[in-house]
Image 1 (cartoon, rainbow, N blue to C red):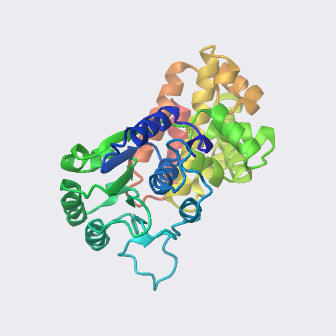
Image 2 (image 1 turned 30 degrees about the vertical axis):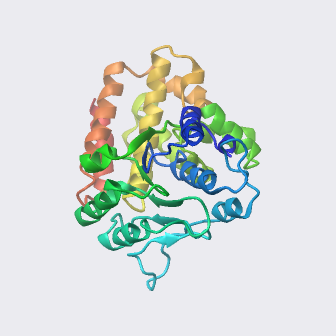
Length: 346
């Protein structure tokens, strides 16, 4: 049932209305940030469309159809022998997914989808095909999808998910009913982590604030790693504002330069950026409850006391400029030293 999903109450209402009307569009486009539940909602809709004993307009979660869809994990391609250019079928004969491999969806699985979309349901009332991260379709794949979108059978439903709808062909967007997802409220996410994941209240509150409304990010985060990363970035800001010690500054910056890869490096930059925004917010007189890292409120207040708006803006600009160079294979240690020296000169 949609009530078991977290957040996006407006989306739930819209989908319930479409189910109740009996005029479910053949093609839906779910847009929104990564990890906020788009795929979970797509699977819940697939359950409702194929449920044998609906409760109102929603899935009963008890019939064999609901249970098999609920058990569909769609595991990632894991071995070199996997056929990466194929649809992934669920335990239910009328539900399949296309997902990218190495950030690309090629034409072969889309042609398989085009063929399968023309068949009547094998066991349920509808065939449902989910295209995850649809922005990664190459031109051939997108054109193959267009053919399916032009005249989908009445019993076939396509659900595309994307974090970047503008990357899709305008002709694809125009053939889909767009459903926009919002980040999950921190209060809802915190409650979920405590009640469903048995997480201590303090940890849940911190994760809810740092995950930017993403359930997926919250569940995948390693809090110990985050706290270590944050301590290193906090050291950078203390050296810049409180101690003024250049040796301490460069030593603190080593944690940034030691990143394993680009993703790890961007995580550290993101933590540094959030700490700056927190301190700036306190400097502007905003209440402590509005900052992300409120458990570090005393440290942040010390930094804020030495921070001007001009300096904070300059630091954030320097971080953003560094992000723009990450497409190039830069030396992270040298780039990190250059960043903190630029911040020190601001």
